[in-house]
Length: 151
Image (cartoon, rainbow, N blue to C red; front, side, top):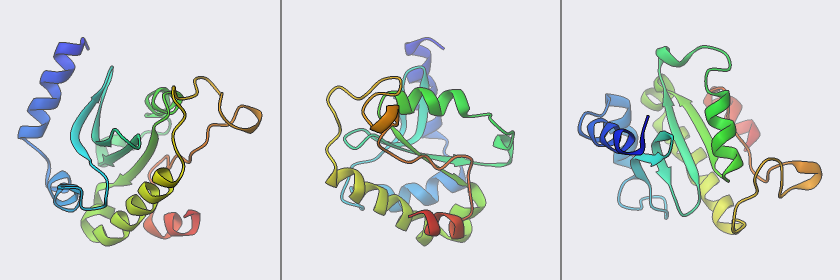
């Protein structure tokens, strides 16, 4: 996709959110977690379901159409190399346990806010011990119970 097409795609997606996106957005909007999220935030060549640009946190809602192993590997790697933390949740998790999903997102916001992002962000393995990037990726989507153990 070209940048202009990406922006138009993001605009269309903002106009027609899924039920899951509406539910999550009702809890993220207006800086409800102490950080500013945007819906359908473009990070060319991709568009994030929800993004907090200041903390570089991406929240992705994955439905049944996103259940192939490794389907998001290239996208997640691209975002990670640019300093983004990617949090993925299944749609049913957001519908059945929105409070648990919000708790995980809130904790990630607190952790990111407490640790300033490098400027510019590390690229291709830079920034951490032995080439490790300094954040966690929840990929593929996992159950809330698993997330609570990780966080």
